[in-house]
Image 1 (cartoon, rainbow, N blue to C red):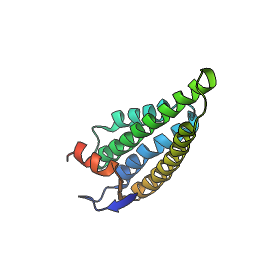
Image 2: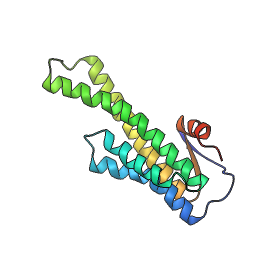
Image 3: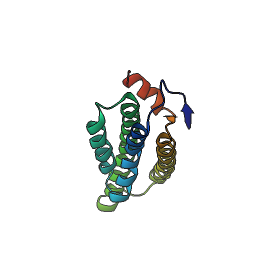
Image 4: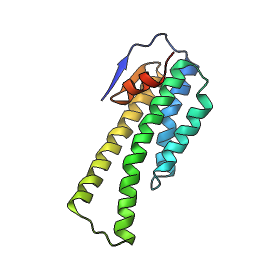
Length: 143
């Protein structure tokens, strides 16, 4: 799911802390705005915009955190609006709905654990590649 890989250089403590904070922003936003899926992406997006001209290590990890949150936003938004349509609309909770909600819960739990893992290891100066997001971030961020 996540692996620590070598990086072109050893980042200093300042870089490691800023890169780690990119993951922590999404965790703090989860606590602050749990029912609204957009809050996590906004918090991570603002942090990305503030650090997009930083070192490559910081930019890379900000981008990976942003991509991760964008995916979570898509999945959670669909579940959020589906739930609203059941509560306030004419839809009923079907097996497909329950399966989707279970999938969202599992995906969010896995993403939450990966984010904590990435934040801790990035703070130690290690370069963490999240499955799917790491190679995508490599394509977006060029040194």
